[in-house]
Every structure is written in C-alpha cells, then in structure tokens.
Length: 96
Image 1 (tube, rainbow, N blue to C red):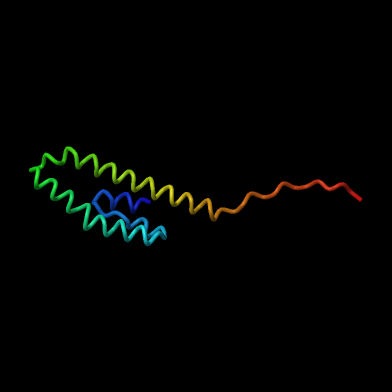
Image 2: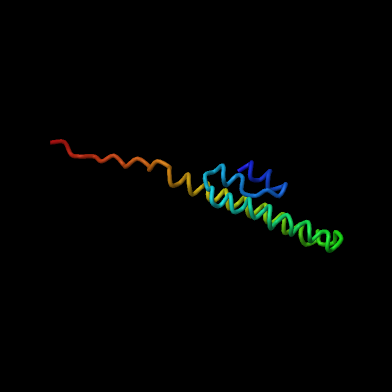
C-alpha cells in the first residue's frame, strides 16, 4: 500500500495493485495513468496557462486518496477471506 501511495504522488497508479495480486486492476490503472491521467493533467495546465491547477490539483489529490483507500479495502477483504475461523466453543459433555 505504501508503494501505491508513493507512486501515486508521481502519477503512476496501479503498481501497488499489481504487487497485491490484482494484476488486471493494476494494469488498467497503470495504462490509464499513462495514457489518460498524464495527458489530461499536462494538457489542462498548458491550455489554461497554469490556472487549471486550481481544479486539477484537488482532482489529483482526490484520485490519490481514493486509489489508496480502494486498495486498502481490497487488501482487507483478502485478509478477511484467508483469516482462520475462530475456534469453536468447547462443549461440556456430561460424564458417563
């Protein structure tokens, strides 16, 4: 999760998902960050001469937070699925 957060700060989403085992989601996010996220951010800044950062900055921060939270929820679901069940309560059978 730390890897995903740090690389998301640089605009590379999906690496943490790949490390966590969700390769399909990770590859889609990685391709999307390179071919959609970066051109949108760079184009928005160039076309608006920097004023677009007022809107694009909070969107980028929201994307980083949302991506990290979704990965954390997916990892929690995986750990719950593979966690050992609690021991069954001991039964007191009457002596014979």
